[in-house]
Image 1 (tube, helix red, strand yellow):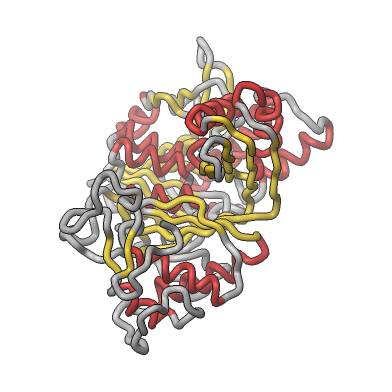
Image 2 (cartoon, rainbow, N blue to C red; image 1 turned 135 degrees about the vertical axis):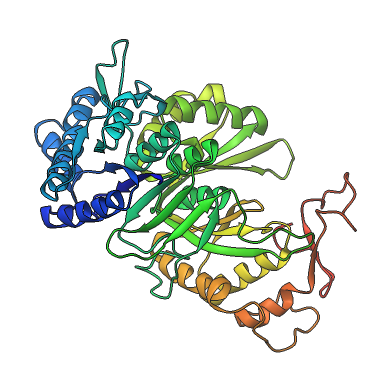
Length: 475
């Protein structure tokens, strides 16, 4: 017998008919001898409809009252789900965020869970009942009497935090797709479910825009080692397991591996020019972001030095929804940060490769560059690590970029033969992805042991193409 926390998003409970199907699924697990705790989001677009009602009477509604209003959506779905479970002969009880013991910070609309005290949930389980908990919300204050909401996708975090507090055997994130896919299936119909992901890979996909699990949910699961399974609520597909156990044992010198792509079409680029002292300015910018309530975890900051080595620029890529508050805060703190001018670029997005060993394998960058060049997609690097590489391009070009990169890195087998690569071709015209994969085998990293660059070398984090005898474009 296992303790299972199942979370059902709005797309899984859009109608009372679907709620009844979800109840059948829950009861089957319960009848199989498992203890089941259910976490539900609001039905379908209920949250958007409630938000529209609020804006009809006040274009800038009070955050406290807005939280009280938006929390109603999950209360409706949780009570209906409990009723549907009762109708099938099982015993269930709905629980609000307060009753489930979800304690949060006092930031209305973007609260974070600080503690879960699931006493009533445990008591219900001990009585053989199925608790149905409202996701997306919690309480704060001296007497835990202020309702707060966790922001978009907050039900994921509720489910993972509750699973951690209950020491559940698994937390199932039930959605409308067959797990975590290699890309967004609305853009790439050929995208396939990924059988297993590490916590780190799941976190990177969530940060890069994959909407199957929120970033805060992925971070919470990693912090408390909560076993996850992302699966469809519409069928019995096993979905994607997420744990700290690697899918395959690591080996020294193993090749780079891309497990999937994620994209985010709603980003904004802000550039601060004439910066004096990039380190202090970066710290000042991060402080400003925190004060403005922007998610630092989803923002990318890049320092661009000037030719004279003294003045430079800081580029910030962040969610467009955070832009108004961030822009106002940056202009207010102009003197403290120390910059001359601020420019913004709208209608941009990011596409990211997620995997392992990415930064240390030069062929990944080469294939990415030539794939996008071949699609005539102008781009600029945003960030690079061993687990994620992100680039920025115009939002209308993102679908083409995602499809091309998915074909190059995921669909085409790594051992697909291509024509020989001639010396000096790294800067040449775009070639087929299969040919580029052959070139990837000719590139070695200068950032690891056995031939690593000297620690004082300015190229120590770069890589060198042994075929072309040149440093690559990102060095």
